[in-house]
Amino acid sequence: MNPLVRGTLFGALSALAFGASVPLLRFCGSDAGPWTTAALLYAGAALVGFWSSRPVRREAPPRGAALARIAAAALLGAALAPALLAWGLQRTSALDGSLALAFESAATVLFAVVFLREHVGGRVIVAVVATLGGAALLALGNETQAGAISIGTLAVVLATGLWAADSTLTGSVAHLDPGRVTFWKCALGASLSCAVAFVLHDRFPAAAHAIGLVLIGAVSYGLSLRWYLAAQRAFGAARTASIFALAPFAGALVALAFGERGSAVTALAAFVLLLAVYLHASERHGHEHLHPREHHEHAHVHDDAHHGHDHGDGVAANVPHSHEHEHDGQVHVHPHGSDFHHAHKHD
Image (cartoon, rainbow, N blue to C red; front, side):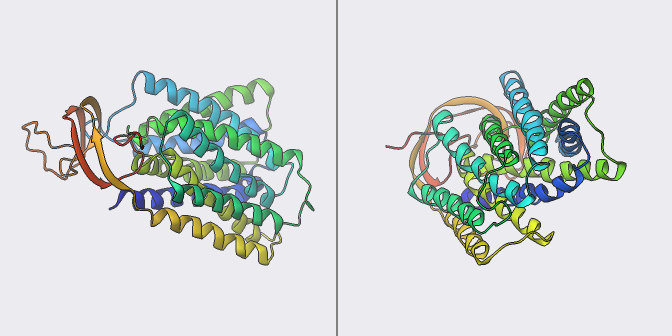
């Protein structure tokens, strides 16, 4: 499958799973402290990461500097950000909270271009503008706050900024085992949140709500993160972030299903957001480019025009496996995004 299409599919799945959780989180977290909420969410996500980790012969485990980046991502995106989200959702509507998620997409694209040096063309820029425009239309069609921005909404916006930094960090380790990356990030985040909750005597929710938060964490944070990493592996952090702008749309739909009001503007916003996804899915980016000689470790197959080495153990060409290997320098043409092997410059 074209990596641009594959990244779009995984990015859309991740965004829909995460965005739909916001109204559910507002309900299940209504009687819980923000740090307790964060701990329960990421405990569920860590279980998914543990269950989905693969043997080291299939996927490269995180080591050294990668573990440091994952620890930083855990602090920002698996402890501080969800606590802010939970606190904010107790002080704003589910629809407003969902709409605020749009800021994460724009911030992550900016961080990916500045810090990861990813290339984005005009089509991606138009898609980013379209997603922000769609979110703005959703906000215009929302009458719950009569145009006012609450402190709860501002807290959610701040959480999206932390998640944008988190996404930039995970983009640099997306070539490693997504199960282990998910487990370590979420387990560390849950542990940090649990410790803060204990010190602050944070409220613990009713049993049914606690179970609900763990289940939300498993699907909307654990599975969503795995799909997000798969999208980043396919075509980079910036394009994944732009697709992730579907999250406000998903959250708004669930909020409307729960009885919050929408309008014809909401339907127009949905069309604009879907147009942005189409721009990504139909993107064609392929040109002659250079792969320099390098030595590294990650999951790969031998029939992808990048990994033609032979290690003499009879591994089939199309079977994914991982080990340290060396690339010879080569120049060729094929469709690609800004993934682990295609961080080249564009004149």
